[in-house]
Length: 151
Image 1 (cartoon, one colour):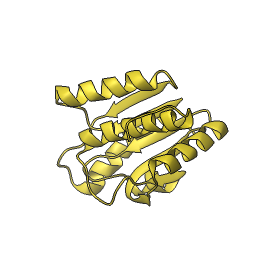
Image 2 (cartoon, helix red, strand yellow):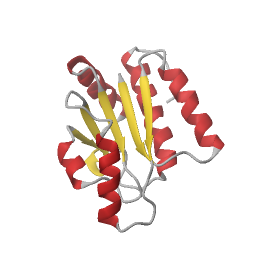
Image 3 (cartoon, rainbow, N blue to C red):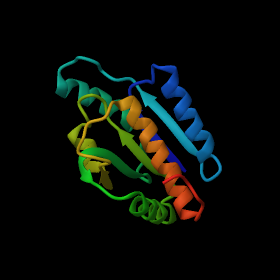
Image 4 (spheres, rainbow, N blue to C red):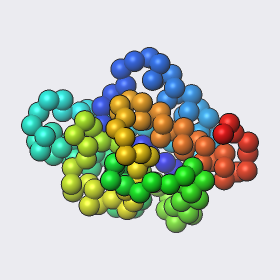
């Protein structure tokens, strides 16, 4: 099972439709649980990160393999990511991907992470990044199953 925990809610219908499309496509390969926790908006950064961390921790167990999405994380190609995902799935029953809010992730969550992943050194809107992550998960399953997919 794959769990995706996101800080913040999708607002625009086109992002919601894109997320639903990729969740539908992924259902052929695995169960994906998408969890949204409220963001703290314009609170002072440390306070916001702490409150978001407390909400996130309710969804993470000790058995989860935790992948944090961080600008400082390791980058990989889609093929390399597919290989990593395969390996993680063989070792762990639950893989949790964590997308932080506008301030990122609390340092304690980063320290708890089993793997820090970066898709780019660029900053993306959180709503868009949710779609990008789901697309890359879908692409990974297509690669692992030797199925064609647009390159």
